[in-house]
Image 1: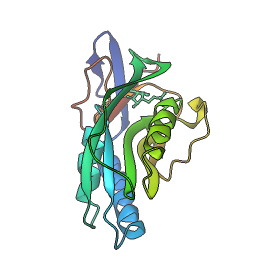
Image 2 (image 1 turned 180 degrees about the vertical axis):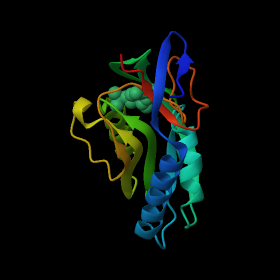
Image 3 (image 1 turned 90 degrees about the vertical axis):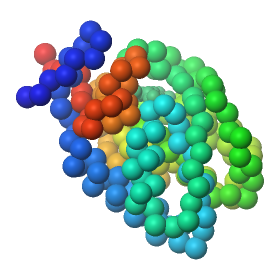
Length: 179
Ligand code: IMP
């Protein structure tokens, strides 16, 4: 097995690039169908969703725009439960069809806060696309319309996801090595 080391931890392969690309294309095709004749605005959540957002847009075959916000709730490998907004939205989203693009939903608190803040700006529709979801970790009600994979309660890195800043550049997704 091709293990990788990030900081002090060893990770093992979990979801390979080819599977990720298939899942991302499927989400993009679904979005293209659902938004036919519309002009959606994708809001990628930095830093983790930059890679997913970039690949996703390549398979969305309708005119669309993209922008980014930066939110943070993680410290090391655990969620702090407190969501901080670091870069806020510059665009006017009133009356727009908005899709919030996230790398992974864990407790769901980041997305809950982002959805609440964005709803106040009166978009005509607002949905979530998340590549990964950890259903066992969810601490709130969240309607995630577009998801790539449901995964168990495991810490993962790669394909945009980091462990304390490192590991985002791997093409595959890795999970903490099982002892
Ligand atoms: P939530 O608010 O607990 O849902 O956390 C969501 C954010 O935590 C994501 O945007 C990621 O930045 C980070 N996160 C959650 N789980 C993981 C993981 O397994 N690996 C890397 N980052 C994670």
